[in-house]
Length: 184
Image 1: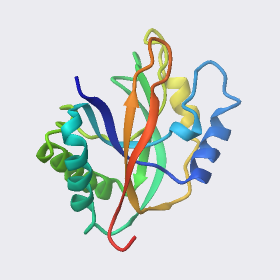
Image 2 (image 1 turned 90 degrees about the vertical axis):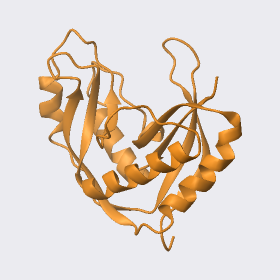
Image 3 (image 1 turned 45 degrees about the vertical axis):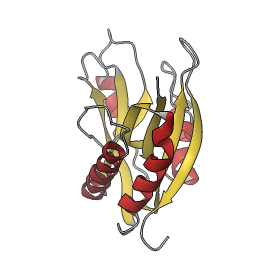
């Protein structure tokens, strides 16, 4: 079995801390901690050990000619549906097309390296919580729609190894590589 990995854009620390401060007093859900907040470009559920080095090389080559771009978090939603949510998320209201282009490049490079991404359609979002599925998320979505980040510049993609630690425990995330965009 291969390693669980993902490639992501990580918002700057001040953006993540601001969001965490907004969420902290809101009880009823276990919110994603600031240090774990990211926008997944590709989830790679089973990366063979022999593919890790080629993956890093191909990802680096895939993003090095893309210009840095502005991004801002705003708007909220729930997967699969607000009436029976499994994930509450914050969306992207600036930089969406650039993130989609970046995700296409990252997913293509991962495939070429033998580290096939999962088959889900890319939807730029930052996971905030995993609520009980038997409760509507509409109240939470109204609260979340009241927050938007400052705009920041995306300069890099981060490749992360995500090790499962057992039921009820958050995976251990270990940074494998930082892959700069053009002129970074």
